[in-house]
Image 1: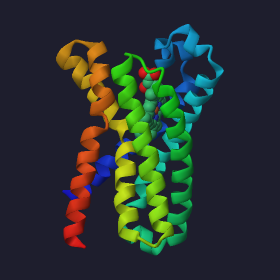
Image 2 (image 1 turned 30 degrees about the vertical axis):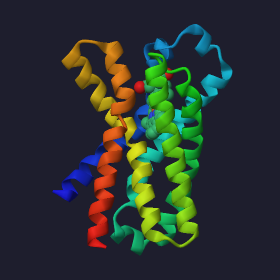
Image 3 (image 1 turned 90 degrees about the vertical axis):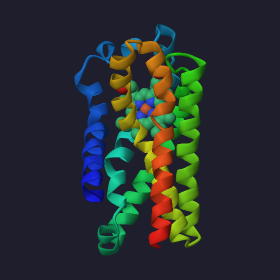
Image 4 (image 1 turned 135 degrees about the vertical axis):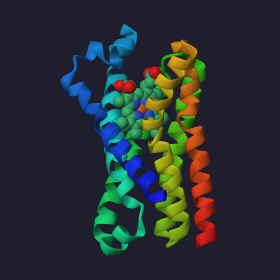
Length: 202
Ligand code: HEM
């Protein structure tokens, strides 16, 4: 069961990790960018943040899952370090961009605060995980990285919650407001229970 859930997580991470590629193939006005007001689209800083966010967010999601599972890690410690450094650098770039973009989120203050909180938690969990491994605290590093990837995985859960809520409520505006919180709060709760269970095993 645990393995099946992990495989499902990996499949979603790989698919949504590649999702930003649609910005290469689809005309921008037909993507999410079409929903942004002209003054945001003319803001060069916002545009730079947007592309930095989706490229490096995609990379962190695409590679992050590989870090979990002790078999691979113990066998290929050097690869774990390389992926780890790439993941952390990608999260730093994508999270800082997302905090800035959060100020311009569709839907106003409720979605803005949801995305900005997520961005800050993503950044701090990831940095705290780096600090812990530098101190040699492997268990704390692992726990914090589970929280970090739970945040990264919000990119997947957002794209599952949003159509579900839109179908159930027929209210796209309020669905978006709810999803700015629903995409990450339950993920962190799951991360908490995974860490708690691992503590019992350790
Ligand atoms: C985990 C922390 C994350 C935060 C706080 C965050 C925040 C945001 C924000 C604020 C927006 C703009 C929303 C708006 O203006 O209404 C956005 C859009 C977007 N984000 Fe993220 N994001 C996160 C993770 C990711 C990841 C890991 C990916 C990787 C695939 C990603 C890909 C995208 C894409 C592609 C868009 C454009 C919307 C779309 O095409 O559906 N995000 N994000």
